[in-house]
Image 1 (cartoon, rainbow, N blue to C red):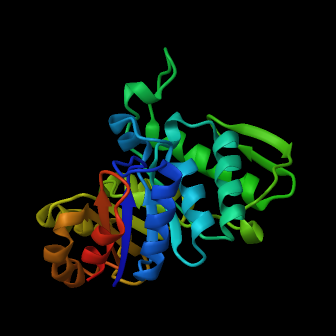
Image 2 (tube, rainbow, N blue to C red):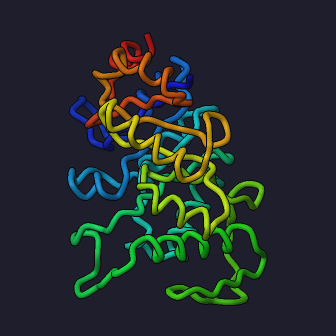
Length: 262
């Protein structure tokens, strides 16, 4: 089972934010962490922390191996073309290490433009994801959906290999999972955000009910508060979790990373 970290891009350390990120990123790679995740849109809005995408640029610059991820893009509140460009640029800069967590729940009001009405956040999110993937993989991209339509669009840079980023669905319920399967034809990865063990079991049961997937076909990630990692390892292993991610409320100091890794 892999171990990763996630954090808000805030620091209580002496020196600049960039220096704190660099020191933590170097330590994370030295300690053998598999991934580093920026918080999702919902958490960034709640904590008023620095932009997760920009923070990951600093992590990418300091590292060579560790995977990078966004823990929960609220695509229903995003402009597809702008977000596609932002993520493709980060992936290109990081040498193809970026993965994307998608939050399909209704956007909070503070992420929406005044007067915006998102009656169907799941449909809107999937439309935007399809548009982003078209821009990443097609030389002259075209897409037509209820909320996004364009043709002949040229978008550069593209993700490394002109590929679709791995998409981690943030533990939606069984009806939403079935809708994703109907729309996309696949679920490649799934993530549980700070669920208690009992809630994790229930969410995994919904995943099995919706897709029939056993551990292996769908990559499963569980985010837990950093101090819960020691007691969560056995639970994660028993549940078939592929990666356990320690969540920090700020950029962790190297000593804190060593404790989690140990």
